[in-house]
Image 1 (cartoon, one colour):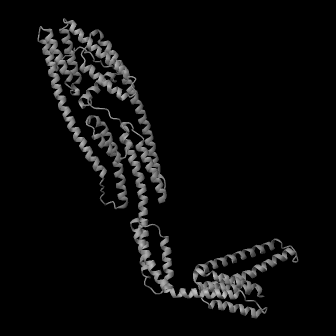
Image 2 (spheres, rainbow, N blue to C red; image 1 turned 180 degrees about the vertical axis):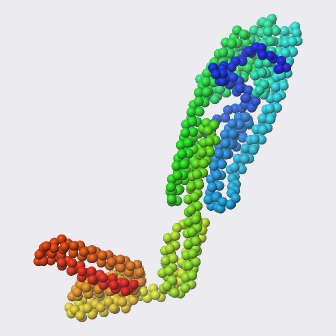
Image 3 (cartoon, rainbow, N blue to C red; image 1 turned 90 degrees about the horizontal axis):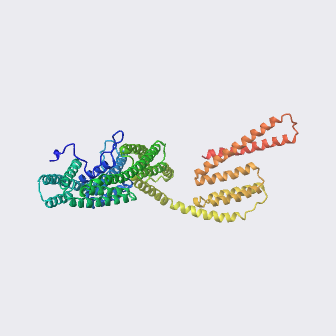
Length: 623
């Protein structure tokens, strides 16, 4: 049995010794290769093909599910094992991030006591595919384990057969070689065995193979032929291994090197002792070179992962900075969200990070995104409260407007309804789900009121149109009116025209330009009339006030009041400035021309000030 081997087991052809560093901790290239071979046998990867790697972290959840379905169509489960695990991790990272955002959005719109639920069709599809993969993988590896055990039993029995053949003391060398070759052929076909038995079983078989060749050393011709054939095959392997050094794809080269090692150890017998160490040393050196190139490539990949880590940490810092910025408007928050999505995509596109940093980096990223979303959701929760307040205010306006829909007191209700419309415009946004509904209701109420108002004013509007036509005819008559030169007669005539104009009635709002034409005629007549400036100005002003009062134009009355107050302020300021100027020239003589002119200006401004104050008084009395 295997346990019968002792510590003096000779080094078999194809077995390299451990190359230890001074510290004795580094595994040699050859031992690393042996480990690869043993693991490949135990996982069934001898039979698997190589699939191209992809940057799964850069794919969307939908694309990852499609990729998983594509991988499952492959008939070798061992070939897709690593890919499926990477797809699963990339999908779950994205799904956890996605569901966290949905959870925060939910609680931003609902009470904390509400129960969050989210059903994701894409997650259901993912679970179905991954369950199918797990079932296939479990079945596959159960089959492998059973086969490994069966192979181990078969190889153990073959070793026992070889031992028995050696110890049988048969005299026919031909029969012994025939049985030996049969054992060796069955050994080559026996398949992989458990990893923990790998080296012991192979060494044991090679040990007894050497014993056999020592036993049959008398039949040198047969032995030498076998050794020569084995040498040729191993030299061919060395030649192919040398070519692999130039292979562009190290992954492909390393995989083929594994295959060459397996053939060397498992399928080709020993060579003459004269060449054993030499060819093994050459093959081991090639193995070391490829191993070193692969390690250098892995080191470069590690360096890229460190660069990716630095980039991802920088992105996390930028997300944290976004969270700290004070944003107070919806438009600015929309810009922040666009920036956040760009950074989030950059994070997923940044590539792999060192495995030992993956979980920590992902946690920092999730926390940064969570903080951003918390700040964003707090802002929109405040907006939601504000919009609810706006909704309450608009509902109150709707109720107020309803109370005037059926009134017949249009004179009192119309200003209120107009103010309600103005107040509505000043109120901000309401929740979107209510916006169209309440606007339709408000518009219907206002239309109902103003339709009734317009209906009630139909006769009034017709009268105003008739008044406009009469005033248009009267305006043509005024163009032929001439003053006779008698002050009183002419003044009485102008007053009569003003009175007659008023008697013609009010005109429609959109045709009030005719009042301006009449005022221009009056202005020309007053210019010709030998009235004092004050009397002329007051007559024109009184006529203007009558027109404003007739049109019930409150805004025009307010604007007139503002204009008159501004004129009064300007005149008072000019008077103060002129009086100050007099003080600076107090030592000048009273008959000084400049002094006389300043005094005259003061008097003119004071007279004009009295006129504007009188206008303001009349306007205030009208209001």
